[in-house]
Image 1 (cartoon, helix red, strand yellow):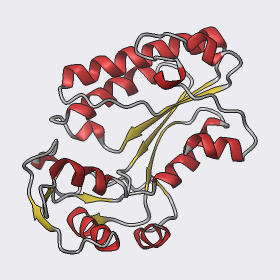
Image 2 (tube, helix red, strand yellow):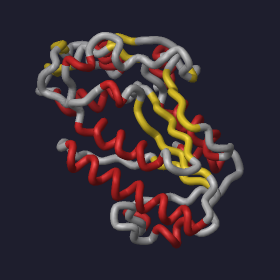
Image 3 (cartoon, one colour):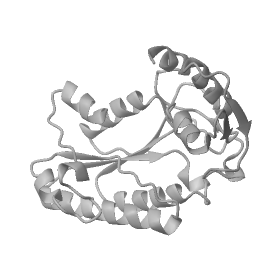
Image 4 (tube, helix red, strand yellow):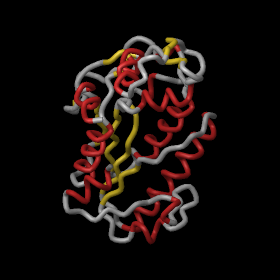
Length: 231
């Protein structure tokens, strides 16, 4: 989506991925890919479920990117991160993202801490669904449309470094209720949702308002109702 947004704005984005012959973890192909680049949007991800493995992935990937950017004269490094990762200790992915932020903050960087996407419900369903039953953590979120995040990342990359800011959707959502509405829109209202903290990378430390953005967060426009209607 970020690539599409940049192209629509008249830029010439280069995709950095193993499928394109570039590996940020090893550094292979980075110098060639970044030749002539003015900005980098780092939306890298890992499926690691161990904190050390997640930290190792983001440390290697970020360090290689930053080194290659310095050699290429890149003026702006943009990181897609997650809101409130410093409030949650037990999540392996958050541990990796914290290390990524630490390294990236040393240079001309903007860290965009985005709330969970609306699409997050479907991802969790794919992890926990067994037949017509799925376990869903009783989270309180302020989710955002992935398309809105892509638009903000593209706009941010073409500007000057801004440090760090939060990005969220227009209103809080009960994650269980949101998932139920998404299932109904998909034609699966019969799926039974079990609110529970088990069977997933979520703990009770995420309960309450822990994941909600702060008062200075930038709010994206797309509501859940609009997102569902577009799908």
